[in-house]
Image (cartoon, rainbow, N blue to C red; front, top):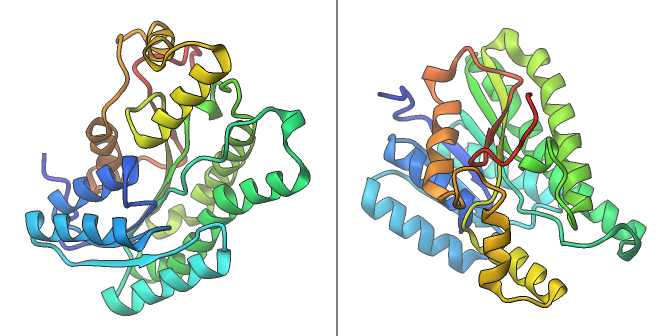
Length: 263
């Protein structure tokens, strides 16, 4: 299927590794030019060089701490200046730390809000005027299965990612008349660096090996395995494509059947 986005410009946050990197590669494969950001410039440069060489697209990068809303907005403005427009925005800021409620102080909660919610709003605020003018745009928020089924030890993620979904659902209504869609993609367990950290944390906390921690998680997944980043990217690319022009305000699970709810 042709996605109809060749020549579009996509801004992908958190793109140096993991799911963000996979999405950037998926978009480049469809002919999108890219503006990529993450905390580390070295990882970004390696990703950009690889993508540009393989897919022959333009790639602009900048190291950005997305918990700083002003820095996020400045990056988006610079990307627009250099690339001419941002047609597709993929909000992705990684996950807040693993902790229980009693281990977290107010500063930790504010930090999670800055990283997970306000970064998405800052980037969206920067690119939305141009999308409105062109009457075409795609905003995709990378969240988690935890917005539908909270995960143990992830109280920050469970709480703040749910706020992202509420914001996105309301925004979808506000911008639909301008042919802009806003959706969320909610991964379950994907084999990324972040998940390896969670596995190590679980193993340490439960006094078991990493392999045992992995097996305990996989036992609860009907498809019997964790997902691959490229599988996640395939859904993300579809949701920001021309083919998904009638889909907005929706949160899509990609979790191997982990979530047991009806909706």
